[in-house]
Length: 183
Image 1 (cartoon, helix red, strand yellow):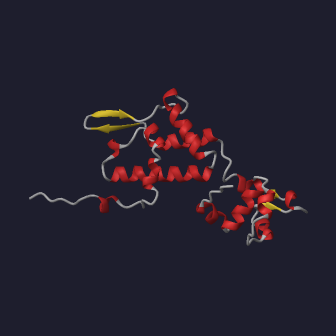
Image 2 (cartoon, one colour):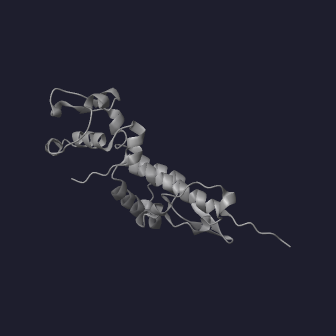
Image 3 (tube, rainbow, N blue to C red):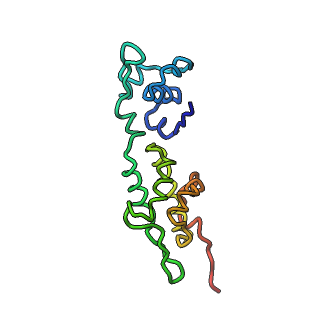
């Protein structure tokens, strides 16, 4: 089984990777996989943090809603949030380029929506990461006056363009623009 661990979730809850894996496998009801692993965890601490309700047997343990909310957000809500941040149009040298349809459920957005749904898979942590990267890109492009070169929504989603802006820190516009003087 392949399990992807988002470190932001670990930081938010103050848990280890072992704790996360334990909770995730409990939620997936992969008890046989859990029994084959050697994890360093404290179930009592997870219960104290409100992430787990302990039962008599392993199968009786219950994952709390606070942990599940990190993963189970309706996709339509995530899609609407992404579109609320993604520009509708950009201006380039006297002309206007349309980047996406205004309506989230418009037919022209359908391919991008399907591709985004395949990537996100209702994982809200993954979605928040994409939105954060989109905000980084928008800040970068505004600071460098390059918003006109932004990709259309479908291209942006298909190419996973947000990955280019993952580690980009929000720098001030003064440090990214060139200073010129007129003589």
